[in-house]
Length: 195
Picture 1 (tube, helix red, strand yellow):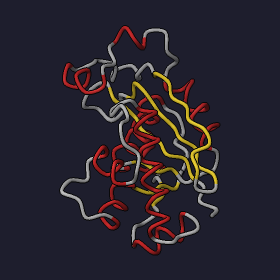
Picture 2 (cartoon, rainbow, N blue to C red; picture 1 turned 135 degrees about the vertical axis):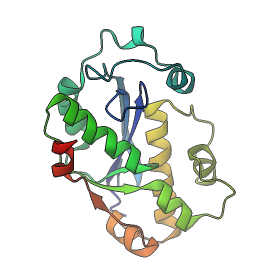
Picture 3 (cartoon, rainbow, N blue to C red; picture 1 turned 90 degrees about the vertical axis):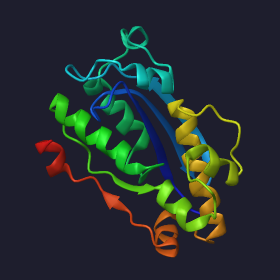
Picture 4 (cartoon, helix red, strand yellow; picture 1 turned 120 degrees about the vertical axis):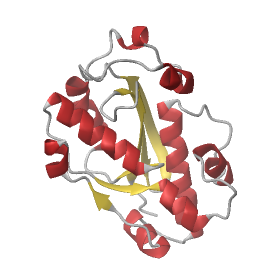
């Protein structure tokens, strides 16, 4: 199996997609998680207010990110981990919006990543009462993780893709997309620049 990709998950400080306050990453090679990483992010100025609702979800508070590097400083770290991989996220539209809008807020160039959604794939693969990440991850054999911890969520999303690839008998991400009839999209960097 040459199933290679990087799963990504962002947590946000508030309702703005630009307010990234944490990122988690999980690198997959040959259908196995081989590396994970995650860190806090100081949200871009103007998007750095923490809402109680968001704090209640992920537990990250303003004082936790005071010494964290800002988005511009961390974009290279994200790119270094992901390389040229297809990115995967559960509800990928949200995570790709974070990438686009945080870049727009800081004036950074958003990398034109290709990406796939493990939520869309889950709906094509499993028959479940809910497709929330913990429920789908458990079906994929990845149970008992700390939901809304960005690194754990990225690993859960990776596990879903790996299990689905096995069920669809797909050797790589393009074959998996074709078999399950999901799309591999590309971040529209023109939209990112205008956002």
